Amino acid sequence: MARRRRSPEDARAEILAAAERCFHREGPSGVTLKAVATEVGISHPGVLHHFRSANLLHQALHQSVSQRIRQELLEALAGDRSAGMMHAMAELADPKKGRLLAWVVAEGHDPFPVESEAGLAQVAKGIAGSEGSLEDVQKKLLLVVLAMVGESVVGEGVRARVGLDDQGPDAFREWLLELVSRPSAPKTNADRVEGE
Image (cartoon, rainbow, N blue to C red):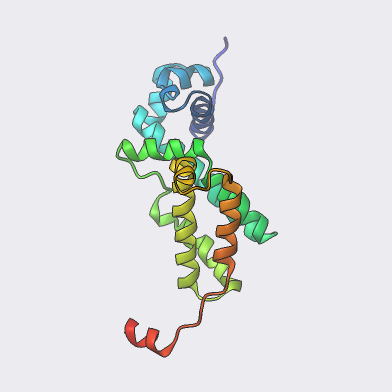
């Protein structure tokens, strides 16, 4: 097989795409340096050249998925906001991504894009532009992200234990979206005094 030249960026992107395919096909145990190298068609040391270790590959994989979901959400905000939010919530709640998130966290890594990118802050500002208080939107976004990450990891089991096992995850997402779409109650004088 002839050796193919790739830019470092292209090689990293191909390796991450291969790692994601391995993960979805076989779970965390399938994302080995050897399996990823075989999937891409490069040597095991070739993967190490770009990611230095399996742990760093795993962390980069989840960051890549997180960045893609965030970008899709930002693009969705420009269109039908409700449909875009449902799509983003479904992406965040995907059990395959939840397994990846739990695995990366268990390995001791931060699974989210670097804080300096301020991705969720961008999303909150995009929503708040037409929806009111930035702080209220930030708290609602926090609730949605935490709920969807929880859904991705243990949603099915929790639904069964609270007696909602006859409902799938879409029913919960629709309810949550309706809940966070309600206008926030205006602050009263008593609320303002307590916050000071």
